[in-house]
Structures are given as C-alpha cells and as structure tokens.
Image 1: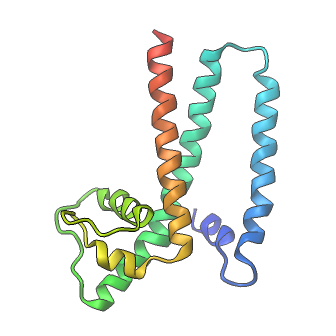
Image 2 (image 1 turned 180 degrees about the horizontal axis):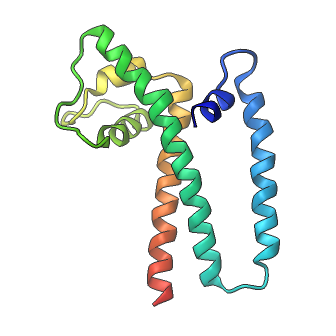
Length: 150
C-alpha cells in the first residue's frame, strides 16, 4: 500500500504523471467489467459497483491516513498541539478529512481545526475529497443494494 501511495504522489518529477498513468488502467478494468455485466440485472450492477467502490475506498483510506493524516499529526506535534486523546480506532482521520474539505474553523470541534488547516497541503485536500466521496458512494451503493435486493 505504501508503494502505491508513493507511486501516485511521488515527490520527484510531476506528481500527477503517475496518476494519469493509473487512471486509464483502472478505467480499462471497469470497462471490461461493464462489458461482462451487460446482460445482468440491476442487482448485480449494484453488488459489483459496491465492491469496486469498497476497493477504491479501502485504497484511498490507507493513502489518506499514511500520507495526509500522519503528516498533519507530525506537524502538529512539532508545533506543540495535542492530538485527540479520545480516539482509539482512527475516527479522527474522518474528522481531519471533513475539516480539510470544509476549509473553515468550527466553533465546536473534537479536533484542532486551526492546526489542521494550517498544516494541510494541496494533495491533502485532494485525498480528503477522494476519501469522503468514495466512502459516501460505498455507503450509498450498499444501502441501495440492501433495500433493492429484499
């Protein structure tokens, strides 16, 4: 996973060249799946779409935590800000993503919004958007599949 994150967001050269290399490959795999599923019902479309969405969400989650989350926390430690003591299973990373995408300081927050926004980079914003969109899409497809299949 770390290799994939480093490959997509490499520091040397143009960062997005690697992303433009991976996107057509992912598109080709999805196109092959669409051709194979052309004669199946909507229930299978929802099932396979949810599976692909879950796979993408899993990869983006690992990349967001390893690239953005760890960087923000490392910079906050250097600055002297305290990390959330209430979190034990990683819920703070979802809150980091929401703060980065929203780009405003909330009056009531469980995390330090000012410090997160001060240390967030441009690629952190892109990863946070991917993280939230892919997670929302996964939940939406799973919910629709659940109610449609009954």
